[in-house]
Structure formats: structure tokens, C-alpha cells
Image (cartoon, rainbow, N blue to C red; front, side, top):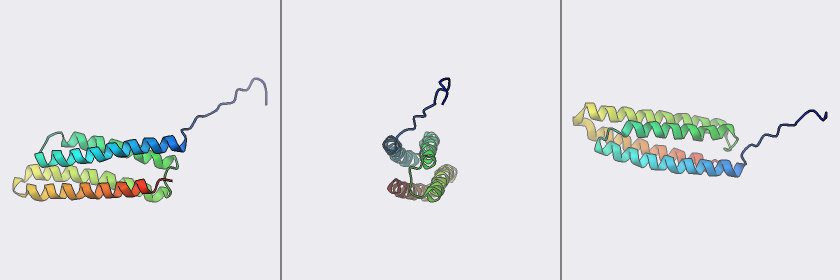
Length: 130
């Protein structure tokens, strides 16, 4: 090696740092789901903003698959795609509840069921961290 060459050392975060960061984001996701449930029940206009935050947090978690944080990368990526669709589904049900007040209770129940499934799927993703 020549004296004129300066080696570049990349500082990648350790697996422990990645895990800690993922768990922090996961806690925020759980909090956002609760806020979505509350906003959906009260017909709160902030519902869409909270869903946007949830989508962003899900995207942050998805980045962990690129870092080798999960045991099965393909399955985990598929789960994150499903979570993204679930957020869109909750937004659609919220719009339907606002448009069709006679069926609003049905659509709110659908939001609750989707949020529960979202949390269940997110729990399975957390369990797959290596």
C-alpha cells in the first residue's frame, strides 16, 4: 500500500444499534395505531396525517430489511408491503365512513379490525429480528 493512499473506513451501525432503532420506531408505530383508532372513532380530520406518519414509520422499518436485520428478507418485505396496503385501506374506510353516515359504524369496525391485524403483523415482523 502506498503512503499516499488513505484507507476509507466505513462506520456501519452495529446490529445492536439497528435493533434499538427498530424497537423505538416500532413503539412509535404502536402509538400511531392507537391515535388512528381514536381519530377514526371521533371522525377527526387529523386521521390522514396520522396515517401518513404511520406510512413513513413503516418505510423506516422496511429499511431494516436492507441492513440484514430480519431472518427472512423476502417474507419481511412482503409483510411491509401488506402493512402499506393496510394503511391505505384504513384511509379508504375513513373516507367511506364520512361519505356514507348510515354505514359509518360498519366502516369504523373495519378500521378497528384492520388496525388490529396491522399490529398482529407488526408483532410477527418484530419476532423475526435476528
